[in-house]
Length: 175
Image (cartoon, rainbow, N blue to C red):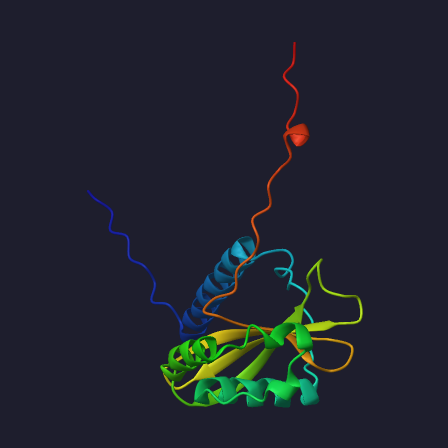
């Protein structure tokens, strides 16, 4: 004769205990999984580059010169003697026409200093991004020791010079 096995009804207390144990087991398992997937240390944060600080007087000159070049009415007395011959009416008209396509100036952002090997030691160079309604352009300007504009360029993008590796820098073939 087969023997019948009956489970005794669980008491309310045993249900509560087994439910708490199940929740604790799930929480513990989830905690182990979370810890196993976590990094032991947070990812390093790169140190921020210092933001270049603009000279307010230079920024004012840059803004004035940009608007003057857009309008085609530059003040020649602000330019160094060596630049005067390059400020031809055709050059001014050509630059004015191209800068005028950008629309009204909305902001000028100092990018950083302009450094050049052929720049006199007492001169200072500046690079600004000129934001306009229809686009932006970079203004590169060098001011000489007398405070005159020795160089001014308008470029559509920042570029770097190509560096050529001298032939002697190449490793010699092994015999």
